[in-house]
Image (cartoon, rainbow, N blue to C red; front, side, top):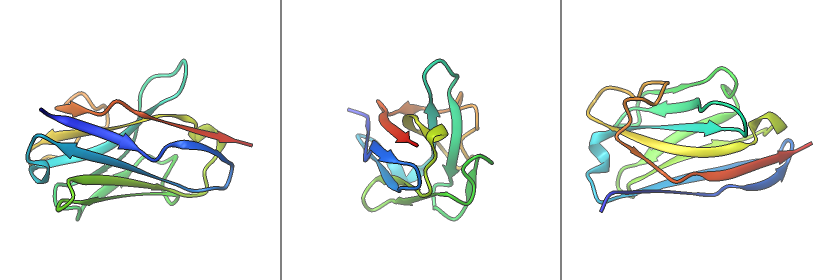
Length: 125
């Protein structure tokens, strides 16, 4: 059974850090590219960051560049999102997604094959 399970969300003060994890099971994770997306209440889903299957290539939304870092550990079938200097506008449900093959996941997320259930991140001022 294919699963993506996010964890690590929580409620923090502005300026704090959180590390999200997304554990994959039921498929060959190392052959998939991955990404993180978020959705705030009343807003559309937004791309946050993406990573190649090997981890050598990463890309970010301008709003998180320099504050967030995406990484992956294929031996553990897990992709991470280190979030530093959190701001209230980072408040959202964060989702991970994976896409089969070598092509990086599209920033729209429309080409994703699998999605996690999401983890809530709340940043207060």
